[in-house]
Length: 613
Image 1 (cartoon, rainbow, N blue to C red):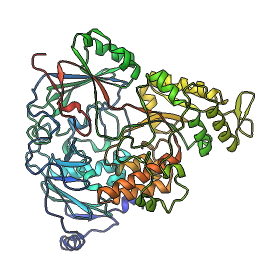
Image 2: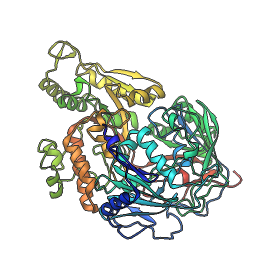
Image 3: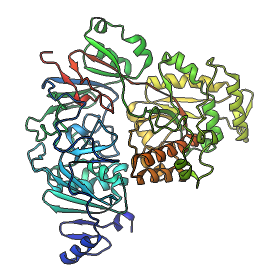
Image 4: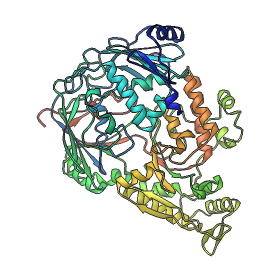
């Protein structure tokens, strides 16, 4: 019997599982004796650590404009394509516009806090101090876009469906629920297999699908029909390979909720798709879409000397945020024999001349990644391990490099010439220790096979960096092969771990939690569709993830995340690349944003179109 089959779930008056059915009186006795007491009854919000920032009855988030003009259209441009509108399954590439605009969750995540949720479909939330369960009471006003009421049965249906056919993170997180019970038409309760500080918040963010309009049998198949949800928008036009258009639902039930005031201000949202970045940028210059989040420093430095900027019709700005900076890297697939030896991976990192690349490819505008939580209090970079960190790491004495433990470690630095002989010697020494020798200009293993990994790339920008790295590696006799594929093939191969090396960017929050197991957990290494793209299997990383999930106070939580950071840095499964200090944004003046920026940066859903533009 599988683990999923063994778990018992309560539904429609019976407990199913392990082949047992209980009567109503017996069930009531089990529930009564096994349930923990609530902490303080139903609450309007729930924070990961401490109390929510906003009190009951708050009017709106501080980082929005509640008086924002309503109406008009907002168009965004995306490079790539799509072959599905279901964002909740492994199959398919889905436009980012669908998820939160069409299908709502039980609660909304605050943009102004590390991790706090407030009422959306669920009016209130209840849990105990140990967080061994969570219960939600739904807002009786909640309606799907077809007008049908949202009920607790819809929530339970969504839970079961996503747990069995959803993405790996859904299956992993929801698998920690021991029992799900509808306790009334508008109330539902989830009891956990053990204590889990974050799971109540994870379940609060569960998307709610319409039971009456969802084909359960075909849910895991790609489709150009989006799931029916209760969100502010519905899909009104889908042009495969070209665009997706959403229109605001005039009967949207949640328009005046505090979490929505100042958000979702335009009547029409459209995503246009382009084959490459150059075509996308040319379209922006012509005014074919409204907002551009720039990622190319060369273009940011020189490409915006255009009429629209010079005459003030286009605004360019760098907007900061309080998030950990994204960790951008080239990842080594440790499932491949060539990258099982840490000395080989370290040599590959040593051969990358970051100083030359930043100056010559990126105009010196980037900063080097070093921590998986860069530029935040969660980063271990430059910080000696504190006593609590050392205590957590003590059972794993070989998991952290001494220099990482004492805070002196930095990514390898060069003289910026592109020909640093010291870097080359250190790399060749590491290769030699691992059994590789440079002979007649080619790096060979003891059986005479050349070292020639392939890097998979999906954009011209990634290819440009790979070509520069290819030249750097050639000095050590490494023959790097570059494979440029289209977006759909890139995502497909990435999901199935079919590559030697691949670029990836992890975006972290100020409250990392269960998703860290999805990124770095040992179990995720063998599960297609996770973000453990390097195949990391580290008992130390697993233990640090468990520790951060168990912490109740912010100080202990920060220590556990820093300890995890030290383990990840020391594993050397990635070549750290670069991040931007802030978000580079270009927008046509017809689009405005709130003056106050949230902790998580400026969010497009809070923007609006100027009347008459």
